[in-house]
Length: 282
Image (cartoon, rainbow, N blue to C red; front, side):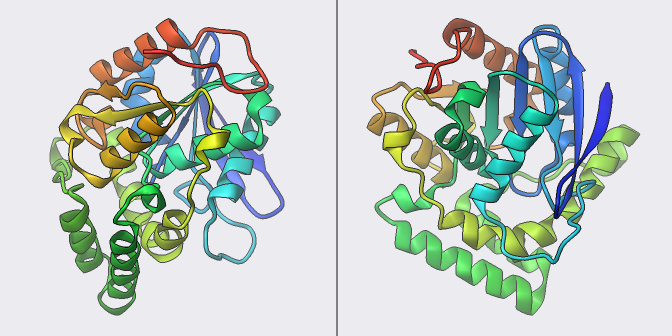
């Protein structure tokens, strides 16, 4: 594995590259970082040069300027800057959760930089008919975080969104996984304090997403992120691709998740770059 630091004007991005083949950028969501994709990436390296990274302000990617409210647009530009810096020509891009919002924004802003995009359970609540309920909830979660701290806020968030899978017991994890868990727990401060509300306000324009593949976890059916993915797929007249597991299937079923991702890209995505991401038929 090759690891590096990309220095920008207001942040330093930790990134990792492994494997060989066409570039595949994995964009973490929420409080995740590069480490959440490690197990799945090991399967993918037989087919791709897998690029993972810690998003700005998360884990090993410290801000070098004053912190502020995070924006999807800024994170999409970070992804573009990273792909440019490492010389990755049109890349396959996979993003999960808020990482899916970033992946879609990257495609809308820089269509020539991406070959295919798979957006797994993007929480674009503004597209839902009950958007007001979700915006109100996220304001409540943020306020609860400010008043009472992370545990109470995350309990409320998890209960209301249905994203309440219990974390694994650290004692049963290898050292590498324990280190990742420690980092992502610390990242909850960023997620709750600076990202949750602003990312929820970001609503992608379906007209700019021609060729995007929407995906959802088979165990996520009925949850808010799955509903968004299904709605977007319907608006784009493209089938929804189901992946193993739930919202974090790449952690719970890494090999099966990676195999599904590879199969989806192989069957639908190995096409020349276009002015828009390649259309992925089911």
